[in-house]
Image 1: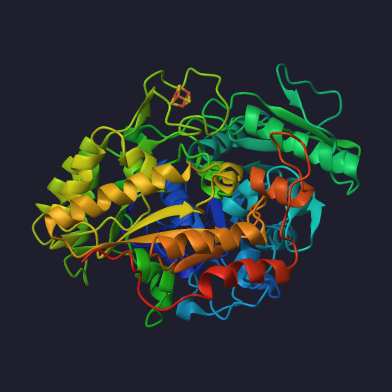
Image 2: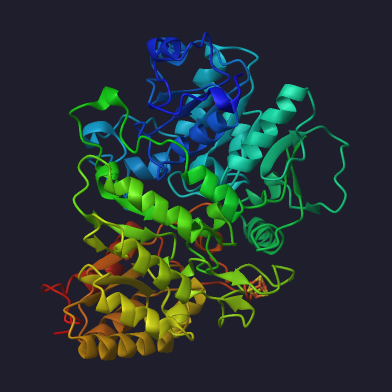
Length: 583
Ligand code: SF4
């Protein structure tokens, strides 16, 4: 291990022996394996982790999309001194391969040339097996969104059954859930010190029989929740509720323990999110912001999309039951400082190929930047309570900070446009300060023609199942936006996202939605087929057919035919551009 001061700070992380040797290394401390092509940009999780560990003084190598059929690929850099770190990449590997309607995708935007098939199915499991076979006895750490969402047993949409935690199926030594910087750094420290890492926040481990964790919440055993009969379905939903209550809240401070066969696993509370200062340090690291030179001449579509964007924060207060972001990134917002984002804008302007347009400043919801809880999260309310059923009075939404940030970004020499392309929360925009913020967006052209919002549905019954605000909130927002747009004389419109096939949404509900949209003169352009993302409460509703509030049966559109019908009810009426465009 070398010291952070020796960090060369230039060039991408090594992917070949020659690149290792050029850095003067005979071995790597940690080798990361990813299902994405390697782009050294902070929008790519593996780049964030690799640079963070490098900053801490570790020698980090990287294998991107190694071929599982070729064992030599996994020994390209030799064995790692400390451990392997494995991720399926920025996306779930099966979702990268198939559409929700189980049709094969023809491309993969996270691969060079957009080529499909460079990432194996169940990449976390496959890569772990390959790494184990390549070097016996080297610990394997599993992370990334695929593993994070599968930290506990989950309903697997693709095989229509309940599967064990990835920790069992991949046979990793430890699973890191959520944003991994802090947990991985602590794990490596424990590994180096020869200490028992079981119990670290942000991780899950298999534990020996008889080992006890004070204050841990016992979950129903895997065998109980995997039983597809009514009693098993109820147990599955009970497990999902316990997870929401004790693990996914802003104060998810309890460990969960669960038996699976003759073994036991423990899931420890999320690691504390990075502070603003730590995020600043992370984003100051010497990312090249480009794909690794090995991809020269081949486009990586996902990079094309994000290369001129800036991340302002991570985490989400939202209560949307179908969304995996809160489950993965956490229910608390961590924001970068104003100065740090402006400094990155200055660096971006100097990047070759920058054309004057910052394509997005945002995070999971753009207008959650710099928001915080006035009680410093000292509360026992359930997951999603910050914004659902109404916005909590302790939530301090900070549109002013975002306005000031945009003002200073557009003052950076070389920036001609700066857009908000991430979606925004309508309910938060209606709070004090939101109108001024929207006015500012319009006045300074920060909306690139369309502002993304996600009402998802227009029937309160369905919205309740989704954990979304009532439709009145959306309607109030549309009215406000129209008024402001008219006053500003701006030619912009709203881009609404809807979901079809969410549990609790019947065909009649979709017909009613289509009728509401027609009445409102709206033509939906974005309709997403519902996908049961593991560990979300909506996925538990989809699998069990139960309403978590009442434990009573709930309608679920299960067959491809029902789902296609729901979707076609909205898109079948497509005639062209949104009539919501404000002239
Ligand atoms: S007090 Fe309100 S804003 Fe703070 S964590 Fe609890 S629900 Fe969220």
